[in-house]
Amino acid sequence: MKAVIVTHPGGPEVLTYTTVPTPAIKPGWTRLKVAGFGINHSEIFTRAGESPSVKFPRILGIEAVGTIDATSAPDQFTVGQTVVTLMGEMGRAFDGSYAEYVLVPNTQVYPITTKLAWTDMAAVPETYYTAFGIFKSLQLQANDRVLIRAVTSGVGIAVLKLIQALPFTVTVTGTTRSAKKTAALQELGLDQVLITTDATQLPAATGEFDKIVDLIGPAATTDSFKHLAEFGILNSTGQLGGQWTLPDFDPITVIPNNRYLTGFYSGDVDGQLIQQLFDYIAEHHVDVTPTKVFTLAETPQAHEYLAQATGFGKVVVRVNA
Image (cartoon, rainbow, N blue to C red):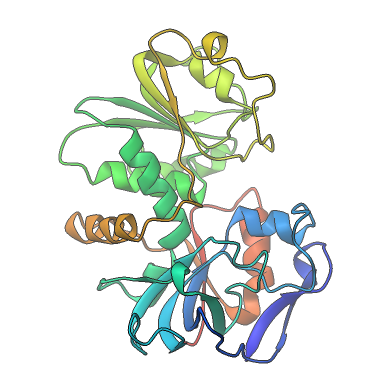
């Protein structure tokens, strides 16, 4: 089969499009014919050698959509069945989705009912699953003022679209470091764009918000709290600020009185929640069209695009077209 393999850490140029053996079925595992997958920042970190547990050579890819090609559990899955797979150390402890076929544990295969085209479906799993978890945690109400920090990221755009599908009015502000993205964000229906020269610090004149989606992560958490209204919810899920934890975190002093801090861990995958997500997309006609689509051979270019400051929204790779 054709696959994109990394033999040593480096830039996008270390992603090599080549021919490798198709993985053989083994007990407890299922082989998927990959129709497409999204490109994620975590894969860029891994490719660059920033995931110490990952050993090379490795086929990257933490998510995929496709069909059952062969399975060790014929009582559980049907050949040709539409499925999603994500997380579970795919592309890290074992080879991932940057290939025409991927072998994954049976526990990591999630049958899905959807009418989405493959390219659109490929934009959903990791990005929209994370966004949906964030979206649900916010407990949004009519007239809420929402801030999305790093709104131009794939998850940021996904959260925005999920919010816009609500049957009541919510005002959404988003941050970006690039003024060049303002027009595109306004076209998406963002109510206000905040330009931040420092992603970890909001402009001094920034007001308060009822709900904040902080995709910058721990590097910006303390700053986000400064702009959270009383009884507001701060969801800190992303780590785009390059900081993974809050050192010496004291919830009594870090979390202001009558404010709430939450997050969403996409590694805790719930098949029912995935189907709820696809049902929400269908019921509310959420446009999940990816910003950019590449072929498997163009995976290095997909990495380059996502890593650029001009990168915007979700990037997917279409396979077996």
